Image (tube, rainbow, N blue to C red; front, side, top):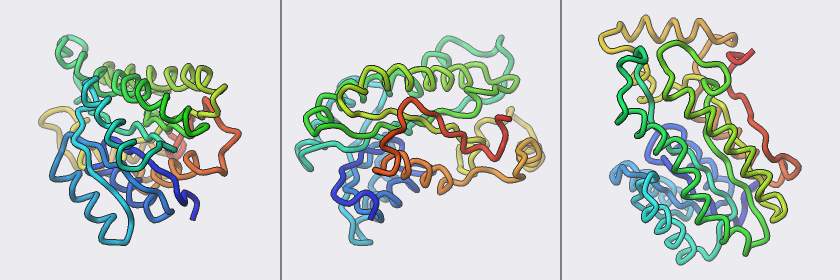
Length: 253
C-alpha cells in the first residue's frame, strides 16, 4: 500500500475528482478526512470508504471560511493525531461569458473558493504537518491556468493563481520537508463540466468541441486525476516540490 498509515485531508470530496481520490487513497491505506460543503455527498463518500474496510470521517467545511478551515484541521488532529497529506481540491466553475457579464460577486466567490481556500487550509495545516516532520500538499489547479480559453477570465486567472501559490508555498515549506505540488486537469467528465458551457448552448455539441480540442481525444476522468494525486502524495515523489502535473491529454501543448 502506497499510503499505509498516512492521514489525508481531501477537500471537495463529495463527488468527482475529490471522491475518486478519497476512495483511491483509502484503498492505498490512508485514513481519510472528507471535507465538503455538501453534507449528503460527503457522508456518502465517507460511508463508501468505511464499507470497504477503510477509515474515514466527514467534516462539513466551507473552504472559503477561516473558521471552517481551522475546524477541519482541529477535527483531523483530534481524530487521527496528524496530517500527512492535504489535497486542496475544492473549486467552483465559471460559465463562458464576456467580461462585461462578470460581476464582482462572481469574481470574489471564484477567488474565495479556488484560491483563498488553499491559503486558509494550508495556513492551519502547516503547523500540524511540521510537527509530524513533513508531508505532501496537493492543489487542484487547471490547464486553464496555463492555456486559458475565451470567456473564462475569472476561473482561468484563479487557477493561474493556484499554480503560482503552489510554487510560493513550496519554497516556504521546503525547510520543513513539506512538499507542495499541483495538478492541471483538462475538462473532466464530472457533473461540473456542463457548468462551464454558455447558458443555452447545446451540451452535446459543447462536449464534442471540448473533446476535439484535446489531442488524446477524450475528457479527463476523476480517476486520471486521482492517480496523479496518489503519486504526489506517495513517497515515490519525495524529490518533487513546486511542480505542476498536466493531466490534460496534451491540451497544454
